[in-house]
Length: 200
Image 1 (tube, rainbow, N blue to C red):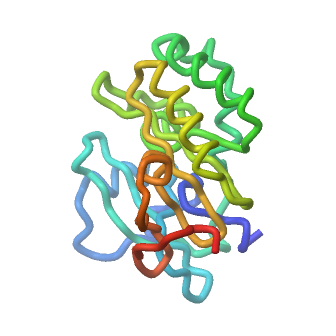
Image 2: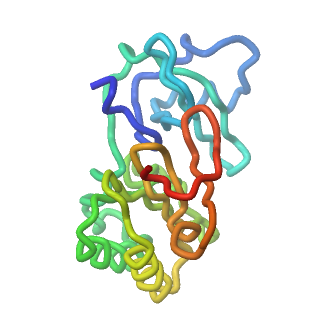
């Protein structure tokens, strides 16, 4: 299971005792309430998984690590694509449009960011200003034509949608891959690099 943990997964199991000294009070509060942490893109060392803790505001983000053995639950973005949207009436109209389109696309996908966090926890983290963050698993290359088509379809929904493609080598923005003719920015565990083809 260790190798199956990926960026954007939500993990439960962090306790205040695992936090270091001089930690902001809001971090302690979030962990004390049993909120999940988010796997971030960084190097894993000695089974220590790089994670981020979310606060109530956009500016409240805290980077730390969680030992693999402490994990009590893991929810991946793909699982959140199947949440009952009737439980989230304030999000339902927007997300149903995305669900229909993405299910037709045939790619494995899911929600991340504030939308994913709210779908997983029931905590109201989405605001009218929030982007709807998606991740698409692309173990095989998505050609430019496919990327352009998908971006155009999503743009027609007139929603604030931000999509990242998860390739075997790292993450790349769908918008950048579809619209850039040269190198694109690939976010890897140890660095971000400019590369012609994120799959090669």
